[in-house]
Image (cartoon, rainbow, N blue to C red; front, side):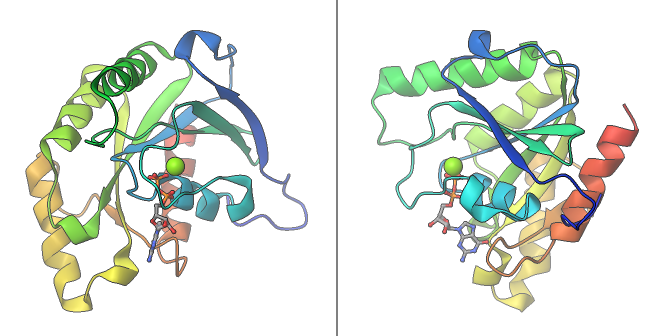
Length: 201
Ligand SMILES: Nc1nc2c(ncn2[C@@H]2O[C@H](COP(=O)(O)OP(=O)(O)O)[C@@H](O)[C@H]2O)c(=O)[nH]1
Ligand SMILES: [Mg+2]
């Protein structure tokens, strides 16, 4: 899978569902993008699809409260999930979104794996990130660790920040993909890793 060339089907917005039960059944492999509010989920998705305008991004955290599905190269579905960990949302809404995320990772039949995004500037994972990583593994989905906003971190901090997140989540050093939706860094590797997940299913 590569960038969308002449002979590749263009990426498409499929649908937005307010809850897991309203998602249509699908026999296409699905990969979801999860992480704290504002971490860059929609931006990374726009970068992968090579179509930023297709995916809504926002400066205001807590905006996406639905499950948004996109078709990538007509053979995999990519899902933009609501963010977690945004303290300013009302408590009952936060709880509802958490339940929705857990229902999705544990119950969505075509779900192959989850890209868990973490902002490199934090130089580590939060309790929320560890909570969700555990849910992904409990549900026996593949975990793809994606570190975002590399353009905002000094080059001499990148490696330490990456190893710190990997250690915080208890994954092997070197598994994370470092990327920047701003510069496009990491896109080829992300697309390749998605291709590997889909090929291995
Ligand atoms: N500099 C920089 N800003 C980014 C990057 N990715 C996302 N952003 C910005 O971070 C904010 C949140 O991004 P968004 O994709 O909406 O995050 P989401 O809430 O996780 O979907 C927006 O203002 C984006 O423009 C990146 O790689 N570099
Ligand atoms: Mg978003």
